[in-house]
Image (cartoon, rainbow, N blue to C red; front, side):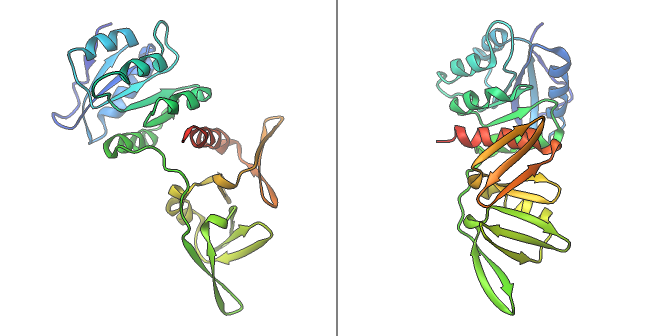
Length: 250
């Protein structure tokens, strides 16, 4: 099939290329991208070879690539793009999480798993616009906690996990814990860039403190200093993806 532009896209904004050999997935991703106000036009190709031919004559601001394609794979296409004088940012969109390490070795901006959620895709577009990839956990922010009328300060980098307890959260630092009046959802949003991720409706964990990930008959747990924490089924895949990203970062 020939490369095509999504006619519903706006006349200004990012020009993005989507490459996927499966037409339903290609059309869905192109549609979702066209709904993003930061995207001006969407070009589509159903093979990497066709996409490379098109890129000889057309510049794009970003390429959204499937990985498992017949002939030239998305990873192989990315290696070719890396030799361009001005390589476009690459976002891999795939159903297979096992390629994440290879993808980030190729300096991918993001790695999105199928089925693609619109909100997750919007985050990938944001990273393209800002020229950023997922940030490693780096922060020594001091958290004020109270105990017996005395205010103490806990370094966020020492917190292994956070547990929701009613209107409070409990901050765990190994053998010691502290109560903080704050909703877990607030800390999830504010501490995401410091490497804290949701693994259960009542738990956040610091990726930097995970010593082991254990799988037993489909049940996932993570081991941090002083605790073994259960990961809910709905959060297991996302957690594994984030750990792969951290492993891929220099």
